[in-house]
Amino acid sequence: MRFIYNITILLLFSSIYSCSSTDSISIDKTEEPFYTIDSIFVVTPIYKITNSSFSFSLELQKVKDFNNYYFPSSEELRVIVKDGKGKTILNTSEGRAFFDAISPVEPQNLDDKRGYAYTYSGINIFKDTDEIELYLILPVKPNEIFFKKRIKIIE
Image (cartoon, rainbow, N blue to C red; front, side):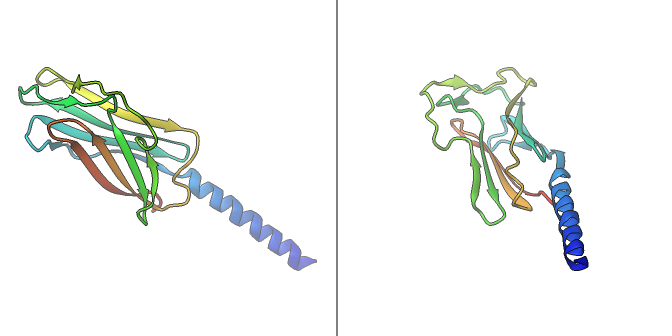
């Protein structure tokens, strides 16, 4: 009887520990800004991840006067998240149809800033992985704007 009691206590503590470890996800990071391939924009990647929500964004600051950048469809920010083994766990463009609608990339004026973001709350899609690979893509023409980062979820 004492053996069953000890096993029950052990299972109880291990379940409490495993639940608390997923609740401890708290990442809030602004990455080092970088220039687009043609130096028209400075791009700042920002991401926030908790146990029940996440937000990924690319902030653009226009640094050169050139207005040929445009979105060829209604899709703005594409987010792809893969687990540590390369399996896709989120793709915001998968299974979606976008309108053929040409629109300019903001900001239009020099030194202005504009953020493109994707936010989600509710389910923890990171609970079964300790590391993710994040892709943030602005599918613009003439040159796609792209950020890739490997992020440790659990230290």
